[in-house]
Amino acid sequence: MRRGYSPSAHRPSARLEELREVESDEAAFLERRNDPAANIAAIRLPDGSTVPRIPGFQRWLWDGDFAGSIGLRWQPGTPELPRWCLGHVGYGVVPWKRRRGYATTALRLMLPEARQVGLPYVEVVADLENVPSQRVILANGGTLIETFEKIAAYGNGKALRYPITL
Image 1 (cartoon, rainbow, N blue to C red):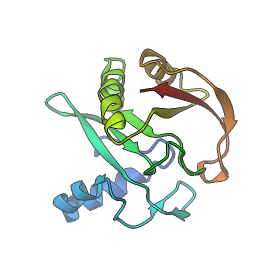
Image 2: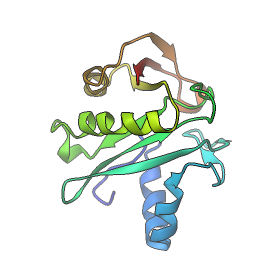
Image 3: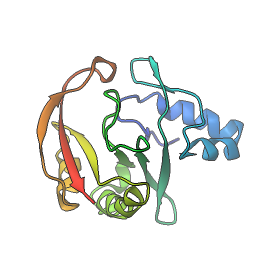
Image 4: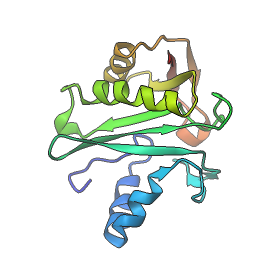
């Protein structure tokens, strides 16, 4: 993160926030990234608004050094997501390690974990211009079902929705 990577494509300031969290209390930082019971406080969307947290966890991509992260989020008892949640899975690879298959592998490894929390499928969303992410999703069995307008909290804009059957 010190080299400029932000864990949120929609909120670049998340990089600085996470760096402060790690420096303040590394154990608490890691605990907040593993919240399958949604016990932690609300989350902040890119526009600054807050919404209730849903269960989820985050995993780090590691090749001897930090390569990125992938997260899974869900609502117990249903595969449906709140309108403000852009997909069950979100991932990012640090710019200096892209195009090496990290995201494709991370998504493939996340699918069994999604099955374990009871999801029959996951939805993965990619911005219209994010062709590399679209390729990752397709390589993992995603099928494009719609182009949609993101909510204002994410700055509007078009995105693509892909379900992956588990």
